[in-house]
Image (cartoon, rainbow, N blue to C red; front, side):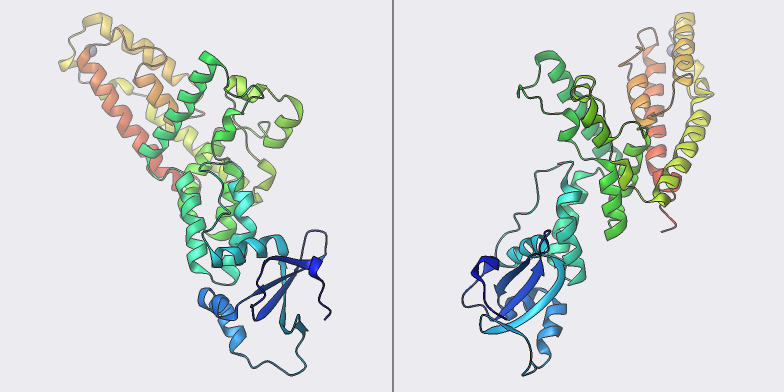
Length: 336
Ligand SMILES: [Zn+2]
């Protein structure tokens, strides 16, 4: 095959002893000149390919054997670069576009069994998604902290960085996790999805009302990326959480030991009012409700006595943990 410099893509080392060819998004062929020993070191699949004897009639390019790949050249470039230096592919932590950015390279790392690269990408995705209730609450606190800061001072950037763009987006994460087996992020990502309605769509909301998400701190997701089975899992999970939470929130009085109450009728009335408000809430985000209501952030536990308050707070913690622990159940993640 004739050598055409303009088709050379990075990495293209003059002393390389194999050329890989792959098409770019415009179906133009791009060439990479690399080293068989480096490829074989990272990938058992390439190691196998190179143990096969080179046939005399085998295709050559620029004086060395040519191997044609069916993968996209943009991904191949990032993939090969990772063999020669630190991986520069990964965006900042919690970037909502990470699943879209890493997808192609993760595909190659999986296909060519480059375990180190795959593990590196998977760990990074996992870092973006809470793996425990404490991590979930820390991320939520961070979201509200930034939101409150914005409400007080306005955005630093006059163009307005969207609040939700500082946090990972759940639908693309679920899709990546399903396609490339990253189960650890699914409970948190499904729960994050369960708080949204399909009207809260990432692309549609950007096309219509640019400022709304920033101003009200609204969040959205790339709904169309979800597989049908995951939409079903989400609907099912929402129903199960709804009924579990309704069960959990009734008889809240029974968790308080009246013998320890030293607030008298005032405390009883305050608890009754408070629990009524709680039971009538929508339960769209019970982890938030349990935190906000019981800690008195929203409706206040002012008139509830010390003893009842501390009993309610520890009960809230138990209930939040129960919801968190059952997320894999609610969303059917245990059958996979
Ligand atoms: Zn009391």
